[in-house]
Amino acid sequence: MSGTTQHTAVTADWTLDPADTDVCERLARTLCTGGDDQVDDPQWVDRARDAWDELPLPLRRAVRGFRRQSGPHGTLVIGGLPVDRATLPATPSVSGSVQRRVTVPAALLTMVACGLGEPFAYLAEKSGALVQDVVPVPGQESFHGNAGSVPLSFHSENGFHPHPPDYVVFLCLRADHDGIAGMRVAGIRQALPLLTPAGREALFAPEFLTAPPPSFGPDATSEAQAEPRPVLSGAAEDPDIRMAQLVTTPLTPRATAALAEFGRACEATARTLRLTPGDLVVIDNRVTVHGRTAFRPRYDGADRWLQRTYVTTDLRRSRDHRPRDGHVLTR
Image 1 (cartoon, rainbow, N blue to C red):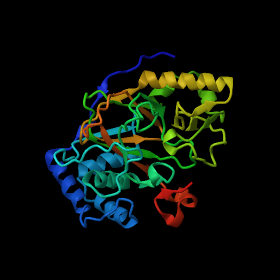
Image 2: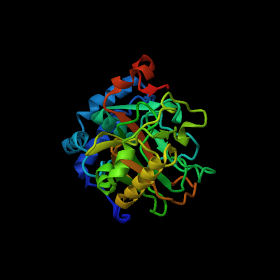
Image 3: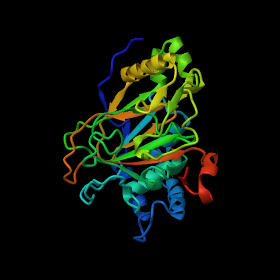
Image 4: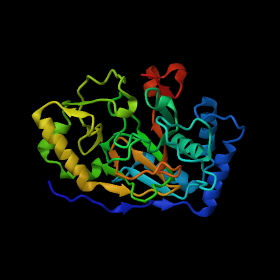
């Protein structure tokens, strides 16, 4: 296997023009009316789903095209979404921070999620909120999750669960002070050619256990936890990934070697996204792993702030995990 780690920072694939940015903001603000609208209210999600059809055509085309074919990197970055930095509140700094009240960023995230499929969440993570804050938290600098500021290793979101997200959508509200925090992404379509035949064979074998991530808390359980799974599944030439370097345990010597080989392939093909306010990132969680570089929070109300939502292309698939056909998986 050959290849060198890519350190080149990547900016947006394309940026909305100012007129389309204005349309997005006006539409998002219509979803903020009433003063007591809640992101997690199913009726509000219905409004956001209808509003998706009114977003600018270039944005809808880009998201629709990505939904059909997520490309060689499995990542779409769109710049220029409206984030009013002048009125943005202080960056949250408490553990488990979420966005319950409707805001312009939360409305934008939810509309895009509805364009990709359906937003959903897990009760055990961030109290089941559909829009979650990704912010550094004092005292959790070394936490290997969204509240930390140390390097975050490659992972697909919630691969331990029988119903992991198909997409993960992030919106940058604030960059870090020093502009050094980077979202690292690596796609199987780039990494696969670097794997040896033996490595591929082992990664397709059910010889790995993946536990819940630290963000689910110490008491998280799953019916899938004790079930060995492969890291790669599906089409041999374009497989899906379920893997988290921190919590995926290989069960055999060949699995150990293959997982290390896969990690090297991800490092060799990784890209770093330097996000600025208004950048929207859509990650195809089926074919792409992501992580984060280290950064230095100051806890002064102006730290790095992303908001995140999960998307499934088939909400029906998880019906037995969702009471009253809601958007939150309770187990």
